[in-house]
Image 1: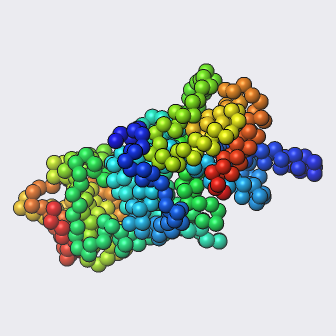
Image 2: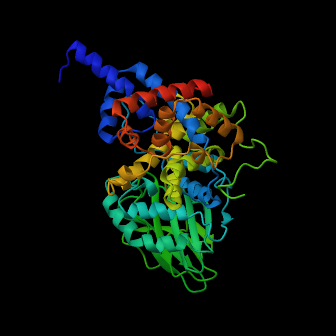
Amino acid sequence: MKLSRGEGRRAHRDAHTLAGAYAMDAISGRDRATFERHLAGCEECVREIASLREATARLGSATAVTPPARLKERVLAAAAVTRQRPPETAGAEPAAHAGYLGAAARRGAWLRAPAWRRLRLRPRLVLATAAVAAVTAVAAGGTAVVFGLANGSMRQQLDRAQAGSQQIAAVLTARDARMMTGPVAGGGTVTIVMSHSRRALVFTARGLRPLPASRGYELWLVGPGGDRPAGMLPGVSHGMTGPVIASGLHRGDRLALTDEPATGSKRPTAPMMLDVPL
Amino acid sequence: MTATGSPDPGDPARREPGPGAGADLAAQIGLVARGDAAAFDAVYEQIAAPVFGIVRRVIRDPAQSEEVTQDVLLEVWRRASSFDSRRGSAMAWVMTMAHRRAVDRVRSVQKESDREWRGAKADIPYDEVLEAVESGLERERVRRCLSSLTELQRESVTLAYYRGYTYGQVASLLGVPAGTVKTRMRDALIRLRDCLGVG
């Protein structure tokens, strides 16, 4: 639609008076879209909105209330399994790579230790309620980025996540849930949340070396109860694997990981790339 | 102290950001953009209370507020790389995100009971909206600046910002033409901005 000069000016002025409502999100979805189109061509408006938002931010900060402590655990835990958006660069693909945990692993508070590290989680404050939320989101088809499900095999992984999500949630929220994180021989970092009361663990990994299609990673529970396969890992999506659940945990078990034929093996046929006492 | 308690008199302005706080937050968000988990921890400490405060103020339901707060904080982690200090302060970036999310949540629920707000009474004691403030000085300043507005300006801002109403809904609640509310909102924010010495 082409506007005459007068109409254009009036439209501009009308749009301009919306700045206050817009800065307070006090406009409907349709008005918002219209105003944002206007903003795209009005640098002055952008500056004004920015300055008004400094004021609204203060209105907001004035209501500050410390949230319950459990929120922090959930947020930090969720961040640890959430891919960050890469910076926007001119002409760049909406990058799928985002080495989200890479830097965190090198600098992060949790993952700093070179060797396996146990974190005792306070009962009921399990880090993992965040992960539960994440899993639930996955199950609902919502937050596809969580757990690195953002690619072609997403549907598949989503279904898998859905199937396991309740079981996973049960582990993550268990009173005795513990998180461990550590390196994999051959590359990558693994994070495990384990509950002996649930006799199960949730396994996620990042940065595992990619395998040819004919091979796959297999998890093992190794211990006094015998050595048994605990499942093949799903394909790596942008460096992220899992979450998968391994159940049937016994006292004294160790968790192992090997590189096996894609169809899986009955017994480990390759060297352990991971051997964690549980 | 409970979450809704008044500020601890023995601990004056504990949460009042120091002079360099804004710049610190911006720098820390820069580190978060590079995946720095320790920096995110520090960012959390600075923004969790304001975010939770405004989200709870708008949404009211505690469980939903916690959920939305978590989303917002995680969004800060995810989108840290898109923060640009040339376009505003870090706190404004965070609070804009928080408020938008809270309002979107309320509106999606509101769609189902669209008529409800029409019946709502237009009494908005703005003391009440500031009841749960932890930062005494900050609250005082905001309160003072809100008092400097005309009644219509103040009601428009309070209903819109703290209750999440659209200007159309505010107009209907106050029985004033929508165009008037629109301009009052802008005037009010300009006045607040100048009074608070920001922007």
